[in-house]
Length: 440
Image 1 (cartoon, helix red, strand yellow):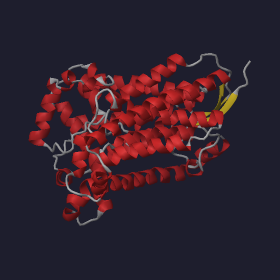
Image 2 (tube, helix red, strand yellow):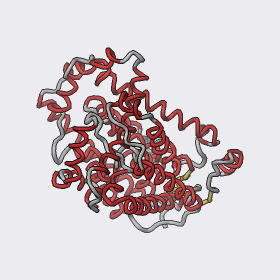
Image 3 (cartoon, rainbow, N blue to C red):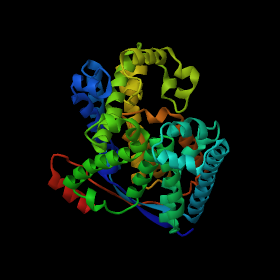
Image 4 (spheres, one colour):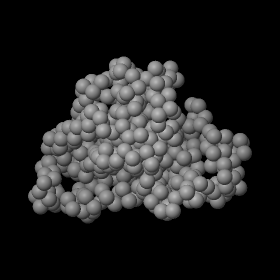
């Protein structure tokens, strides 16, 4: 028998499905529902639609999903040890090489074509200096997407968790590839306004990093500190958003229109992206009756012109243009299944999705390498649920294809794992929770 490599893994409540739901989707939804209609229009130029039964159904849906995640806590909360044979470790190293090669090759082609089209250091410096129109030129001309090439850059989201796991399995340094990967994602976020590229990579890598440990970090070990950390996460998000918006929109226009400063502008804009997404979701639901179009829920298919140009979507675009503000056009991920399948059909869909997520979290708790990698990526969709339906995007399709390849090639022979259960968190009793977590 090969010598086993042991990797400690912890599924703590703060990065469990319940914790991910509590950190962004639930507070952003509640915050959106609490904004008065007059303020909604003055801040984002949209009439608020968040006072009807459909909006109430969204809140009930999130609360029910949260209760389901909490009730399933005993199934997935706990620590375990992933035990990998040398053959599986070799597979892991080869997977890193293959996915890194594809990812960085796609970046190289994209940047190379950008240089051929006219991208130069002087252009980038002009963008950094806030020169009018330069950012738009870079995004729409020099670094415009290349069909069949730039799509594969999204595999970098999967590469982050793979590198984290390889580091724990082999001890090899991952600083260089991870630094380059984040630098490229930051480049996309800043110069191409693709903030999600950095958000999804950061989220997947952070979740993977948090899971490979025996005890939770100090900031998350006790309930009060965990709540403070959730608030801190929102603060970090505001600063991150301000840094990306500074040259893109603040310096050229909003600095002269807004007297409250950059951070206040960034907070208003960030909240607007979540609030208007939920508001647009209600509008999307009103565009036409449920058509039971499952194609809008399938990765990549929803972005095919034939599907995107469906009667519902065309009606939604007309309503957005005539009665709302098309500057904010995201549709909340909470509303897409409900609009397509009806309230009860959408609720059933989310019930099945929640069960699949719990199953993956349970797989992590049982020491499954593939569940570990899949959960790290699935976490992005939970965090972004109130803003977009991540799982139907073309970028997730590429990641899903990468996951399928990993599941098909993984050496199936495995060694037994040892797992220790954690009691599910009792949010009403912080003392009991603190002792539970410390005992873990």
